[in-house]
Length: 580
Image 1 (tube, helix red, strand yellow):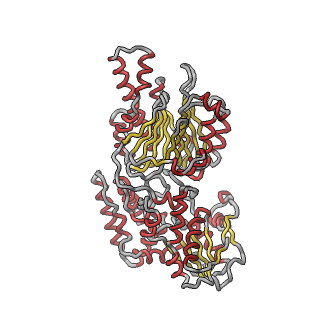
Image 2 (cartoon, helix red, strand yellow):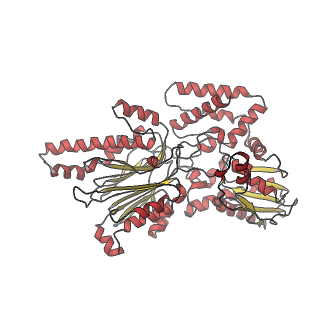
Image 3 (cartoon, helix red, strand yellow):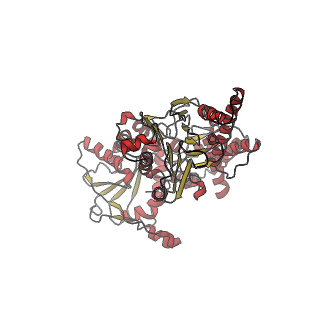
């Protein structure tokens, strides 16, 4: 219900045959471009603020453009871009990006791919990624200490300049080698382009960055690369045959675009780079030593497409594991309970919940109780008028619940801020006059912001955090807030690697149930007549359902990197300084 801005999506294609091959076999020179369009549209869920594409044509002679880029902003950016692209946008290398802002910055200048120009083809670099770096201040200081002056203060531009600087050094290294070999003029250029080592560029760049990322790049001379963070936080998958090399953020989009079986597609390993040279030679390089597995569990719960068979099974398990808690919440009154879900992303976990009850022999009643009716243009009003319009974005199926008799069980994939529940959902569900509303979250309580690519940077926006702070104040434990603030401040003033998330102390005095009860109280509208209970997934249940994706910092506060700890401590300090 509460749309989270995700960490973006990437797509890359390298054609491994001459362009005439695709024209003869598939009837068009746009084969690669058409496949890029499919990969991007199938990942549209990952970014709707903007999109961009880049292309390199290695067959172009000097004096003509060989590296192309198109970008657009807005939810229809993909359509706009591919309408603009003409016959010149044909080449052997393609890269696409879908953007959601994770920093609040918007506008065309922040839309990937980014482009660094130079008259030497090998020094041209186009970069895009699914990432958020947590130590960009330190990297910026490092660059400026070397004499660089990045034009924009953002992790995307700074990464472009950092990798671009290392690419320049690689080209210069090869230039000196060529001179020693006695080469001249175009022979020097050819020597450089045929011997570029992207692994050198990445090995001297990526160790400086802390964060979750999948970084993709193209050079003007025809090099292509993808590199994944050493914790495996952000996802990437690839496919290769004798015609094509493909990379995307999600596995099923590659399956669909190229008519493949699931076993044909492989995951990029943590710290690994996939590199395709100008001559089409493909290699896999370990750029960074893999850290402990921190693959993001939120990818499985919410963001990734459930058309992936493994994700589908995991989301069903998430729902099924909630059966005991839901059963207890409705007092075993299965006969007088109606089950439903909202939004559509919760549909698969809903199937799992229902399947779990039926395995126990219960013939549960299911209804489509809540509908997302229309997209009301609430920006035309302000204040209370805006809230009133927002309350009508959803509608209910009247008569689906027996008034004052039926419990109403609604499952969602996650509850983050709780704003939509309080201002809209609970109000419209109250019109049905159920005996009780049980709001079920297939995810555990989201207690901490993400700093690896999802837009939830302020701790006070999270309803679980607000509930904990409310409990602290009600029980006159304000000293816990000031003590935690001081610990955060001391850690940050040391200017070193912050190894502890001190904000975890805020939750320690309370059980998960106490916080759930307080969240339900806080999110209940003042004029609500129906009692509300909120049931959350347990941490153990999460890990049982998603065993290969143990990254759970949203729920536990166990950030995999020092930068994550530093940023959450800083966020808590900002909260205290603003509200206390």
